[in-house]
Length: 296
Length: 294
Image (cartoon, rainbow over all chains, first blue to last red; front, side, top):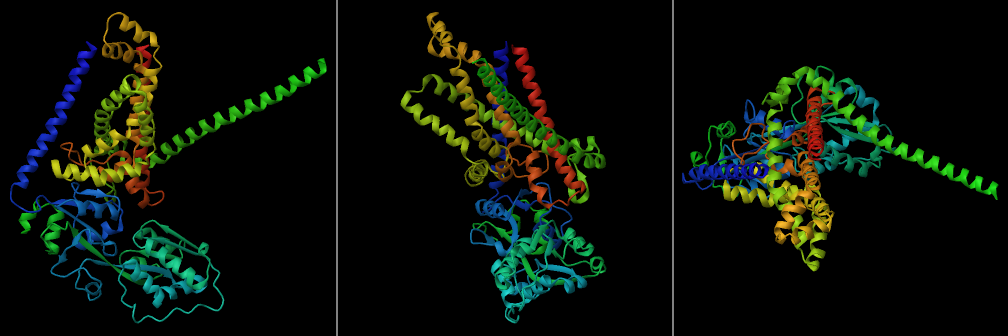
């Protein structure tokens, strides 16, 4: 009796899985049969809390991210997924773009550093840091570090990282102070700016001779960074967005250190190479489901 | 002479007490670790459960931390699907391989096969995840359609992942069955297959069940491999080609972004608490099954 039950259970399971697989295969066959080269649009997004995701949603003007988009836990996973799936679309920081995928133009404008600087490429966001004027005066390391960021050497780190610098050619060279500063600096905020800040701190420590143990970097989001800089728990806050007026009202001084672009990427086999912001919005709102509707 | 014997005994006693203390300390450390982790998980998850409500938290399918919506129903379903799928794939293969290795495998082949299962067990889960992302996911996408990051992809990768556990535990329990069972069955005229499947396998039942449960535990708690290949969508899947988000994936995806002490952080820990309760229930069920089978 027991054995018969088990056998029935196994057969039922096998049938269920078979039916599900066949059912999906059938559906998909129909969609592919509509005669497009890339077929069904596959949406890829980043996880909730990611700075890139927040910036993408804000810049494109989405109300919210659809539940049907596959969530990737890192830029690398987005790149691998989009690079392998014909109908895929995703977004990454411009600095992470490589030739396994194709970046589409937005409104006919290519995603390049020049186009971000002259403000024709719309999907860009500033990387900001903010501090209190009093903290800057009392903390000699922070003061020197801020000078380093604005210097030619600092801006070079930013460009090497993959961000866009508006002042790389005009910035003055960094001058090492006569006596090395001794204060400790606590930095906190955006997870998007964090990795860049680590590179900046590393380069600064090499250039100035300050021990890297003087710096602590906490990555807990733009909002937390601004709050922390306001209440004094951080000496320097990082934000991957513009600093808001109510944050400035708390006595913060904001400084833009770099610009970062968001590249919209598709598979290399996809024939589409230009999208308008409106189309992009509709793609992520699932008003389009097939690339053929976009003329690919 | 007598004096010396007494001294020896005292010395022995001293050692004995010291060792006893050592054993107690070891056991206490283990119990303390368990209790501290339990207490941490449950205390930290209270704020979220209070804010959201236990019922809402468990049965709402809306997960949207930015808007204060915390419902993990889709993830509970996701974890169950992935676990069931992995067992459907892993258990038959593992079980039959174990029988092959215990009773059919020629010696020279066994010497190669055994280390191979150990190698499989030693591969880090992130490597399984990357393998899944680069091999299994494209394969499913090209042959069945959809995103590729799906329940099916997870089931295949996790099914392979639990093979070493199932094979080695089942094989050991099959080998532990007294030879007389097999010989007795042959003497009564059974074929080799009948002798193995009808006498040895039932005798090794509890060991085989244990191997499946250990595999189940590994599947439901697996994180790094799953998060790369399950798609992480927070909605109910319609087919095994749809992506899901598992409980573990939810925690690891968002943990690095939460603010300390926020409801969001608490909700993620509460997700872990639900997983913890799941594993408790499974352990209890096993204890019950074993008790009733005895």
